[in-house]
Image 1 (spheres, rainbow, N blue to C red):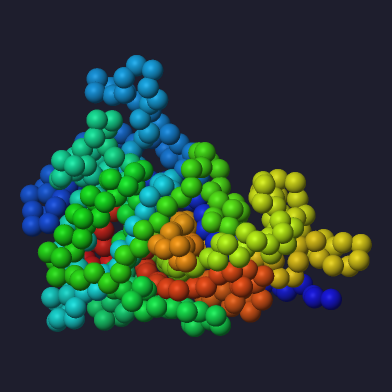
Image 2: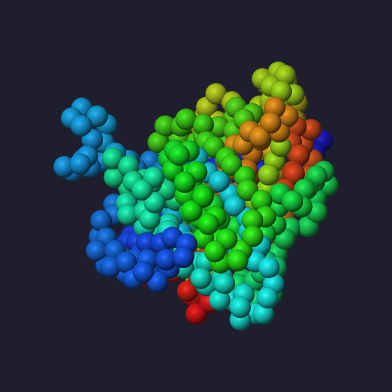
Length: 423
């Protein structure tokens, strides 16, 4: 009879919705080749827009609506609230998960350390201007100007371990690529990178245009593309947990703000509002999993498909009872269930913040873009080591790409991303 392990992090290897946090507001403006003028405009915008942002509800449940003279016609639903760019933390983590996303990785070709720092500083300033102006409703491209107010966008920018080491940047010591795990089939062309940019939007049109402009800014700074990956969320009511392509609610056990301060955000100091992203592209054999009887699917996951409740509970957010047994002595949540192997109780309470997306690149290549945010990559390594060894989902998932990035603190109004790091 299997015995209970003693320590490991949260529901992992499959994604989530709803982060802890609190954004402020304000914008600059930007576009490639116009940085000085746009940064000056950004300072003006930052001063005028700082007080306009309502508090974002946890889980992406805030849909503020206001209709001014140019708002929605009578009887139409109110426009959803814009997500501010400026704040202590980046909007890609403080705002609700938006349904369309694109991950973009870039490399900065080596030059002199001084030249590389200058190129990085230029790019971060240009991205700050572009993203803040778009979020504030004053984008540099008319294609991003809609009739219902600012487009709903969110973003995050991170720096890869190799670039941080090359430029001797003062990033946390826990920034490191995870080791190889049994069963990995990683494609180097789809992973890694000196810079990682995640753009999210409420609609594919906005995302496409924003991706184009961000890529142009990268090209102007001498940064070259490495890989990109699109993702999506299923239609999900505000505040609810989205489902993955296996049909299960995915990301139920994200940390609250108190737990996130301990396990996700850096300690007090220069990294307090920063974190580390561990990204994994996970191909899912949806057809083979769907062919399993429903009870075998639920046993592999450790949760019920209909409502997301653990097999030992009655509601989605009930704490799984890892010690409950059937009369015959077998665990109610099997020893190889995904929920058991990723449970915070098994790792001294350690939790990850997960904001994953589905992807569908080909009939035989669809799955999950797993994005976990941790203070130290060792948290992810402990969980994934257990999963690789005996997760019941292993016959149905293959990890095909991996990346790690130091997610910069946010940019308060009047500042740019990376200012604390680059001076």
